[in-house]
Image 1 (cartoon, rainbow, N blue to C red):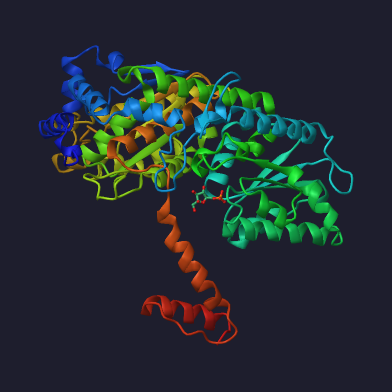
Image 2 (tube, helix red, strand yellow):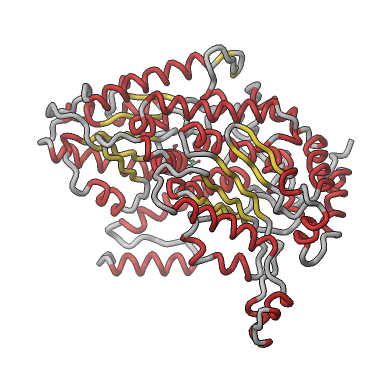
Length: 546
Ligand code: F6P
């Protein structure tokens, strides 16, 4: 039987018709005008998140068709398959079971018939013991001093999750320890992170799933040399100042880190889905084991909601389906994530990897080309700062950019009118984007005719608002799981593998080839294109190499 194309699915055809019939302008104005209950009805709530999607360019019928689409691509069965530990990462033949990382005692998550929840709890227990000892000063450095600075060395998922979570939960972090993060192979990153540090009170966490990533291993070696230089070359210091987070025990030992100081995880955890595994060790050191478990509780609550709630009320599923609607049917190539929450300043960068490394794919599971645009470009900055830079383009530019606004009702740092002003700005932006300001309205204000087009706002820029009470560890967990499962939902509809990342390989291989050409003492034979060859020659000659 020939494979059924996405475009042939009845729900897809219905959605395409809905898209064709969308009014060219003022669609949201009329949708709100004819339907006073819309702003309360097109919302959903779970796990402390209130999700308002009423300012999206859709109506109840669009929503019904999106849910039907989810049913026609068997989303429910695919969710269950992930939770059952099926090898849904087909190109790497792996299960995808980050949901097991936040399992509660009594849960069962099996990979190849082995219940992994005991392994997860065992590592969590070891992490907790270690974190307590570092936090209360029982863990001492080589010269007998307690740890005052933790430096996480990692990149991609081994950096973005830890940094994002540290920044997000800083309010709950200990003041006794400073946290720094090194990711870039640019020596400046390590040098600046190490500047002013006392090696005797510094602990490095080398975070790398594979323990072979070039950037991380180079930074880790420089850190080791830096430590040894500071303690007279005594290699015994390494065991007191280095711990590793990895799935690769062999490479960890080869690096010289005591396996007793290694915190493991498993190949069924993707790098960008690992911030709640031992990759979160820096997070646990910062906020303590109890708060870390609260964060896991938030993840778990959203997991259960995703697994059990009807698709009509399912927050991540709805968000994922709306992203498909915007990206694949309405032609929106990017989406902005705009946290009105300073603590979430690294959240857009975190979501970039989560979404773009997962769904930046152009072939389906069977290797054939996808049938519509897939993963959107994700970007963003915290409000209100963005309002004074790029919002101009969102309001009046030529791209239609769906936005996610995120905000807390209560600040963790109440200060005069700040929070009310912050929230007023968030709500105002969503309102302005949705409804704009027509030429007639601008003219009615007495604006000279020649300025009217410049001061008109077209509106119909779709947005969702995600509101929560306060940014607690549990809320952060729920928020991250919400986006993880939204990304999963999108991938299921697009029929792509959201869990591999072959696209990062080619550049790595070519860099491996170019490195010796840049460093060689004798003039290398260059076989690249003329541009790459000329750039290599220029760099070599500027560095006084022949
Ligand atoms: O190169 C991409 C990538 O593999 C990401 O998927 C991953 O998060 C990152 O590199 C770091 O990998 P590792 O944790 O193995 O060092």
